[in-house]
Amino acid sequence: MTPTPIASKSIPKASRAILDPANIEYTSDKQKRAVAELVEDFTVTPEMLKAIKTNFIESMGKGLERDGETLAMVTSYVMGRLDGSEVGSYLALDVGGTNLRVVSVHLNGGGQIATRQTKYRINENLKVGDAKSLFDFMAVCVDSFLDEHQIVVRGDSQIELGFTFSFPVLQTSINRGTLITWTKGFNASGMVGKDPVAFLQDAFNRRHLPVRVAALVNDTVGTLLAHAYNHPETCMGIILGTGCNGAYIEKMSNITKWKGETPAEEMIINMEFGAFDKERVVLPLTMFDNKMDRKSVNPNKQILEKMIAGMYLGEITRNVLLNLIDRRLLFEGNVSADLNQMWTFETAYMSTIEADNSPTLHATRKILESTLSFSSTTLNDRQVVKLIVELVGKRAARLSAAALAGILEHTGAWQQKAAIGIDGSLFEYYPSFDTDIMDGLEEVFGPEVRKNVSLGLAQDGSGVGAALCALLASKYS
Ligand code: ADP
Ligand code: MG
Image 1: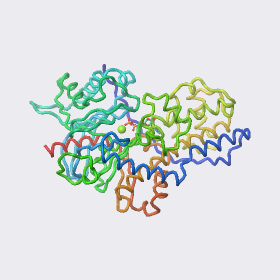
Image 2 (image 1 turned 90 degrees about the vertical axis):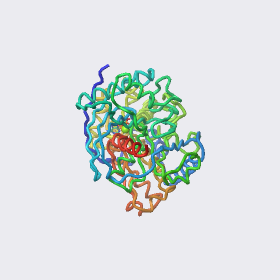
Image 3 (image 1 turned 180 degrees about the horizontal axis):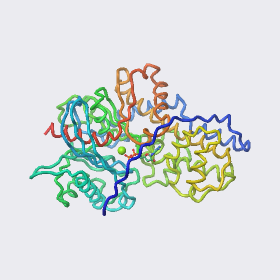
């Protein structure tokens, strides 16, 4: 079981090349009507955005009152803010969904951080096998990272590690918690209701690694802390990657379910907002969302996440394409063997298609014909595909905006300088995701929100944040 490191790649981010539906030469009135219907079904109007935001704020309130609500509003046990002066060396293990990352973090003070990291892919069998194998794999990755970077620990001392475990966990202390449910395609047996820190520490101990799990961190909390290290006005950490979720700084007096001591006035809340609208009262779900949800490993759960996050957008798009194909309104009714398989239409393809500004939609053609093995495509096919991608992508960004607006309104943070740190490949690479979110915020708060609120990429925030959390943990104890 030797883990294989993944080389990191950097893809420049493009902006969306907008296709006007009025400029498409439709093959038939029927096709034109079908597209118009899709535009209607996938458009989040400003009124809808505000209604979702209002409902979101109500859900936040319920989650702050008691456990077991739709928004878990998990108390992170992270209190106190950072000012960038903190120093020390830590390890971080970031298990996000798609990849596993081991990071060594050196906090040099003055907001300066040096990191070294190695990424490993978590194979599908491990995600749904037994929990012990999954955690043994994590320990193997940390072990090989220590070797690779020649990190040596002397005597009886131990390296402190912050563990970013980005699944819904009911936290009971800074380094204790229990898994509420698996998400994002994971379903390893014997873990729900158990403490992931104990599993990880046991796996380290089995390999005699001199590593102590000092903090259990959600990636949203880590992202908030990481962004705060060099933007002290940070009020929120958001993930837009495989899944979606957010954390923000809440006043202790608003966390009415909190029964513990209150040594500080504020605590970071991990919202678990991907679960929003389990009741399905406000989100504009389409038949394509429902189909994807039904076939996912966690049907009826994480409804908002499934409309926003990277794991799902491609599959929703694929469902729309199949529907048009079955009605003989696209690709002359022919499907390629590849497109006929679930999860083959990757969200990364959507980024390429969105950015495609060539008159013949050359990049789109390449994806359809070279990657997805369509023998040929017409310009009309490619235009319709591009339009559908745009609808699914824009809806995701506008729903993200509704959630962010909810948090900003609840905290009042939009009225002063506020930074939002965002981590995740979807935000990083998807064309115009940031501008779509800002446009949505402006619809809610008016133009001054642009002056106050900034969206910043907190790249690998979850790794750095875990180290910062390990540091905060040792400060308390
Ligand atoms: P994690 O959530 O595991 O920490 P990432 O933040 O890298 O990992 O997010 C991975 C998700 O991002 C995947 O679901 C993938 O579909 C999506 N993704 C990867 N590359 C792109 C891209 N170029 N454009 C849009 N989405 C992408
Ligand atoms: Mg991540």
